[in-house]
Image (tube, rainbow, N blue to C red; front, side, top):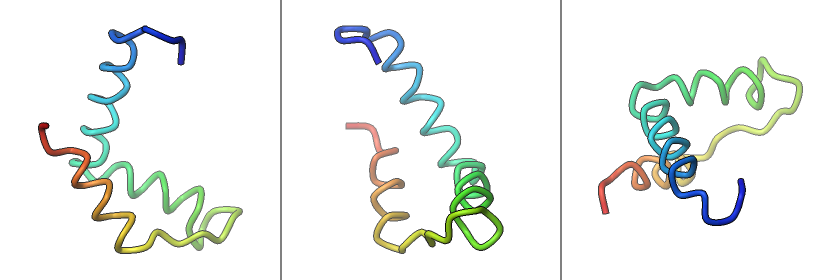
Length: 58
C-alpha cells in the first residue's frame, strides 16, 4: 500500500470488515490455510476475537 493513500486504505479496511462480519473471511481463510488448504494453519480463537474487535468503530 502506498504511503499516505488514505482513500485506498479506507477502502481496504471497509472490505475487510465486510468480509469478517459476513463470515466470508473465515471461508476464505479455511480454504487456503485450514484443513482443506495447502498450508495447515488453523485459526485460533484469539485470532478470531482480534479480527472481530477490529470491526468495532473506534
